[in-house]
Length: 172
Image 1 (cartoon, rainbow, N blue to C red):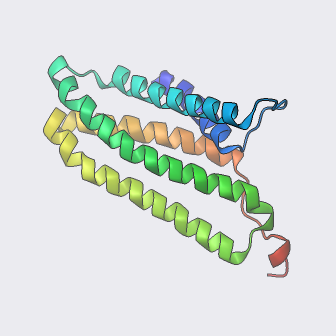
Image 2 (cartoon, one colour):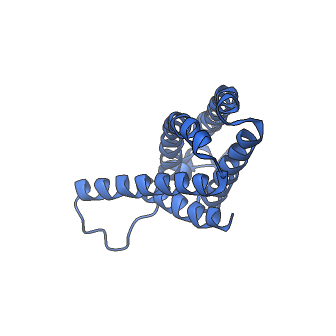
């Protein structure tokens, strides 16, 4: 699964470029062009993720016919959560230097809510995947999905600074 490492790095970069956390040194393009490029980067990362899943699932033609529409529905739900997470990371990155205790509580609550929502989607789709492609292939898919997610989260964790008291809470 060395292709997963390639994807994870690209996906993390695409996510952070889309957040505005990582900006090009010479940002001379218009806002509309930048948004279009970010959308293309995210679409490419999501297509790469699908290609990696496909390359590692070893599905028969019959299994693939049942798997891919379900995968697309699963990813559509997960993409919404990824967008929510990206917005949370962007908001944190913009304010981490002035973080208040209330901000920190809200951030942690949102992170936990997003993790729970991801787990809820997975729990919702496990029986659907099992019915479509068997328990072994379902387990394999979720192993691949979890590895990709873990690698992306690791990349994000390396970029996002740790919380610290802001100027408003330095006395706390």
